[in-house]
Length: 286
Image 1 (cartoon, helix red, strand yellow):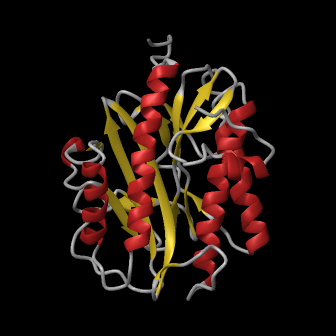
Image 2 (spheres, helix red, strand yellow):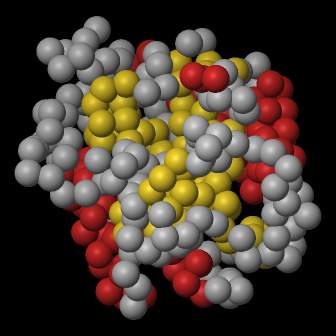
């Protein structure tokens, strides 16, 4: 089941179970986005996701993981990742990132979204935000994720993904007139029978080419980008990661399977066909 690098290789049937877990995650994140309003707390968002996962007969990946006390991670503004849901009240103009995982029959799905909260809920990508730079940040981070996923379709070695992510962030920064910082302290990962597995999936260029890609690998690709330097620190709760310079951050993630005939995005309803089609990549339909 494992290669020499201890990377878990899945059968097609196992990938199909992961697809079921991925769709539960997609449902939970859609429900959170639909529910989010100014005046809600991050604990309210957690309750929405918990309900969707329970109704699907799945289990949350995060709850109890190394003692994490909630179903999702909710990170707001300068919080990058691993924010603990609680009494924090959301306001219009907040940048909200929600990271969610679910387990179906022992197999995991993992995805994250970010949005700018408007007066009536999450703003559409093209909508005017109170701070236009926040909307640009969210779009740039999502585009970088899709660039990394698209690179995975033709890559021979894993770290081609990180090079594509960094190139996309640089391109967005030039277009937006912004100096984006890629968070390097936290990276993507292998996923399958455990939520976090080898290999690490970096979001930046490195000299090492990384492991050779093989059918049956499943990877969580998740860039985190800030409007500042990208350096971070952990708060006293030992979970919440914030930018050192208090710049706002965004986080996007999808779980992707490498198959014999290509790739498929297990946490996207269409398998990633829409966004990847725009980048010239066809996806495998499970």
